[in-house]
Amino acid sequence: MAEDNLKAVIEALLFASDAPLALEQMKAALDNLETTEIRRVLEDLGSEYERVNRGMRIVEVAGGFQMTTAPGAAVFLKKLYKQRRVERLSRPGLETLAIVAYKQPVTKREMESIRGVNVDGVIKSLLDKGLIRISGRKKSPGKPFVFGTTRQFLEYFGLKSLEELPRVENFKEALDSKGETDDAQKSA
Image (cartoon, rainbow, N blue to C red; front, top):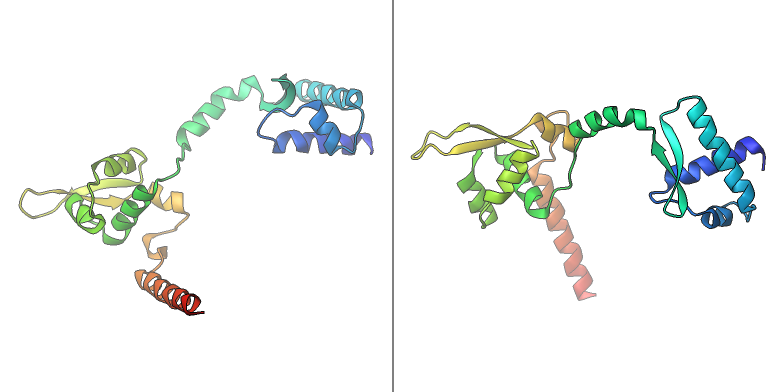
């Protein structure tokens, strides 16, 4: 294997791995190339990254090698991830968020009526994540808050606008056809 190609392959192995790669793991992936040769290429790549002041570094850690970001980039990465902190939603969170998306503006009581359970914690979580917001008060006794989705909701789901939400009728059709399929499978 040519030197440049070997560098590229080792670089790709390190980039794709979420944990430090041991020399033996790389050796197995590189058709049993000698570990001394692999170590030499790793050191060359590491020196090259530092010399050219790249944003990546190759470090030896926990018995293996790993690609990391350069220390000088830390400040910028913190800013990026502070803005982009995206968390997975729980099933109750998704259910409640769907209710808000389709029924907005909607009160807490209306959400609980549809879901059949208390939604206090879920609402707090969705508010904290910036996916819903208090959009006003309902003109009814007690003047409860009403909730709606946010711009961040659209970004999270990759929508241009609420009009891009799938139509509720499509869900009913999908459920009906699934029910027919299930019935056919049971009778078979």
